[in-house]
Amino acid sequence: ISLAAPDSCFWSNETNQFPYALAQPVAPASSSMDEDAATSSDRSHAAPPDVECAVCVGVKRRAQQACLECVASYCETHLDLHNTLHAWKRHKLVEPGCLQERICPEHDKPLQVFCRTDQLCVCHLCLAIKHKGHEVVAIKKEVHLSLFRLVRLLCVVSGKASAEEAMERSEGAFAELMLSMEGRRRAVTELIRAKEEAVVKEARELVERARQEIDDLKRRAADLERLQTLSHTNDDICFLTVRKRKTYTHVFKNTINRTFSYLPAQLTIDPNTVHDKLHLSKAMELTAVHEQEPYPSHTARFVRRQQALCREVLCGAPCYWEVECGAGGSWLCVAVSYKGIPRNGRMAPLFGRCPRSWALRKRGTVYEFWQISQKDLHCCMFTYVM
Image (cartoon, rainbow, N blue to C red; front, top):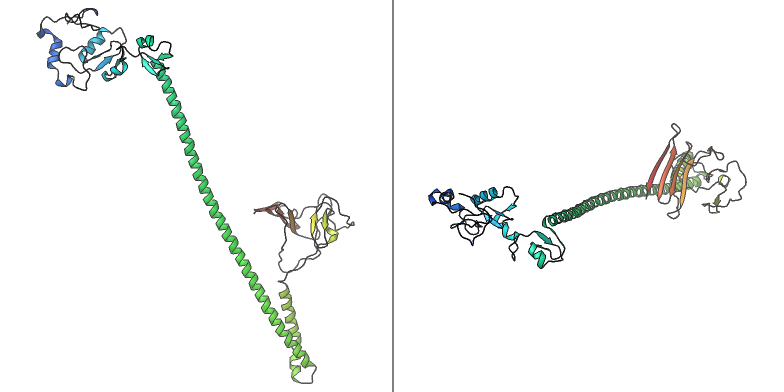
């Protein structure tokens, strides 16, 4: 086989022009190309929807690749010849089925540029005729730009999906937190209700016990009156019961003291201890004021701190206080203190800020318990928010 010049005829047929041409073989038996064609398998022959080789004569073989520069598809044998002939050039090879998509249907020329105005791939002839003056770029550049826009869009979509996923996780965590808080609220409410019921039950039992003791006292008082009436008679029987009068009197006194220990005691504020910026009303109510009250000078009066003490002294059985508070923004303090707490000078403390006093403070809806240990002089403060 001998290779002819690109502008020569193919087997003396001047009408068939190809990028390269083959000389006419001397004898069919000596042509290696014909022998290869004769011995090739039927599977190499082109059949629909295969793409045929553009160079094969007679039975067309199935094209293996197509050249965009030559605008032709080649079988394996002619592809080797094509690569040998154009070894010094870099022709771009593609799949045979893709060749038709890369050829201009109007001019049969390769699509080489992209028209941004019409959003089409066009050949150079289309660019000079129909797309003259349009904005065009190389196809490879437009592909790179399209890939960049696609990647950016994917990043935006991925970021949005991540944000939505984070939002869903946050909503789930918030819902779990709300459920946990609701469960704790119910538990605290049930605990408070149980404590309240226990206190009410205990108070009712104390009242019932006091009522029974009062009834018993009334019966015993009636017996005493009857015995006292008998003591003025000359009946000998009365002397048998008079001896027990002292015993009954002692029992009645203890019972009365024990009964009255459950009853509330009225506390009165000592006016000699009231700070001059606390107003003491006739109803024994203390109110903080800006102007000084005209109180007389007294050694027991609090000078440094706005505080006051009661006249009554606490001793004996445990006690508790019932204090009426103001609105939510008001504040007050209920304290227990020794009489010798300092009243004046830099060392005069607030109630609860020294070892000789204990204080419960209310500021708005916040309750605090103050107490300083005499051993380590550290403040112990417990806060409860309503």
